[in-house]
Image (tube, rainbow, N blue to C red):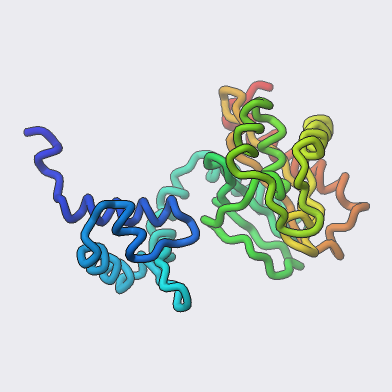
Length: 256
């Protein structure tokens, strides 16, 4: 019997709601969800109410918009554990955090953004907004620039054309020409720097990770306060992340 005959319509509608919320990012109201999915508002409301009760959906108290809940992240944790690159990289993140005293991150690229998939705290880490599952822009982060630097130029332009170069702090690069020059420097050094461009007062150093086909698939970084991650420390921290990313890449089969 064809698989389609086993499909349950109510479950399909529920999955479409979750997918729509995931795609929206900033949340959607009941009417907008109903319109986008061509579903009855009462049906969508009942499903959202059920999802909310179990933690799969949250609702903004002011706007009333719905967003994905943290229960989704709990479910995805088992998938993250199975990601080969994360398993290979985790010991290196621990080593980076121990040697630097700062927080070590790892991201994978997902389309036009990067997603944190691992994080190890250092012994002098200040509070940061990073968390596993959080998405960040590519142009304003060290991990993002480390990825962009090794993508084809036309792909970089496509990403910027779609996402733009929004400013998150006064230091964010908002010019394509300036970004291209920055990426050239990343390729020359082997690591990227975020000097308060994504979060004020935070400085990061990141390096790319390549797979067995030579494609850049991820990046890792050392991040901390500008007080502890000083400009004088950048070359040393850059060497640490570059060596770690290089060894991870080799273990993934990269021959470059």
